[in-house]
Length: 404
Length: 198
Image (tube, rainbow over all chains, first blue to last red; front, side, top):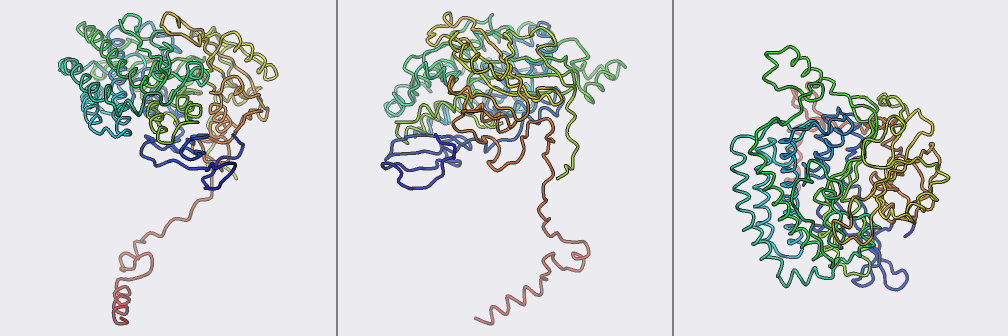
């Protein structure tokens, strides 16, 4: 590594190496990623990812928004898993407010449900695009069909497909609509067959195996040193999952396993994701059972959570609380907190500092994608350029989160 | 160049860890910059194998001005089961830095510090000595200023505006003269002449 950035020029340095720029518009980079490659023949000598093409200053923006408005913005970071981001953010703010233990049971169950559904949807995108990179087009349609069902459910709950903005500090935006549970049941029924299709298309596919087995090797020691989390870490044999290590939202009450693999390659990470989708569905089924009990979905604290809209016409206090929350937000006691959740890509964390105002003083994201992608620098050297596509796909970076 | 916007109100300078007992499950430590590297090395030897995250906070008006925050995780490097991982310990190391003061890099201990330190340098202007490749990561390489500092306005400092493109004025439109000054008749004439020339 040098202090001067690599530039794309085809000059022979020592030996026969040359510098090649891959991206930022390369179709396999799943976004705007540029990789400066130093190659010898077809072998990668060094790979230096250049990021920042999608930097939108979300963290700076968040410092200038009310606590409730920030949540809309953080969902835009990891746009494939909006509910995971929202969940992590509301948990952190609830800790600062000291209301973590007052969130109703039903709200917790629905939050878990949303987080797991969004994980399945996100893995669907990863599997579909990963398979397309390797030339298997039809998998993409199977994956997106399943994802479409989940997006429909997100739309029913929150009102929008991609960014439902359904979770709130203190609970949820509202209860699930009529007919939601029936549609969820239909998804639960459809899911095993669809997973069988996906496994049948890829798991024993000799071309897919040829391209992924022993490609993108990342030893457990390297994975830890490079701060890799999520399915990529568990594909290297380390069973670290935030849901088990630091349970939140009542995850300790659910029965599920943490799939791990010891092969440390792209195929292992692929299998971990498939297993994880099935484990997520197990959690969804358990959360579904909890939905039978009716109950409130938000805390009863008008200083933080606006009272129901219908009460405005009847109660003067409700009107005042509404006005205060909409016009100047709520205030959060000073302090700092680090909260993390297990997002589809790994440990997604927020380090939030409050100075007692109605806006966060600082909101630092721990972007799982950024650290996972950084491990490419360790993973790529010595491999073929063609395998680089497999490695990027198996790390599953989302550039909204990498660049923020 | 004077800014067209007033800088955002920084709020009261605070020191969160000294305000009240920690509200998350992390241990909190405060370290001086001169002792930072020795402390981090000792922590790594203690078993803090993962540098979960590295970020910074700007407490404008406080001395020292910045806090660089290291989130560490005590993880066994070969943990094949959930039981083996157990509940790892989290540790937050805060290091106060004055504007212009340098910090030693943590890259030698955890390679994952590479991009995180570049990001802190990019957005706060804190320099990490010994970093192999310290340059901007999120902002363009020729950017001026450090956007996440509290005295950096949300929409950035005022810059030279590019001249506005010519728009049709109302009087021109009524007279049928486009903003370029070329009328339809002139255009038709030009086309006709070009046709005649051939």
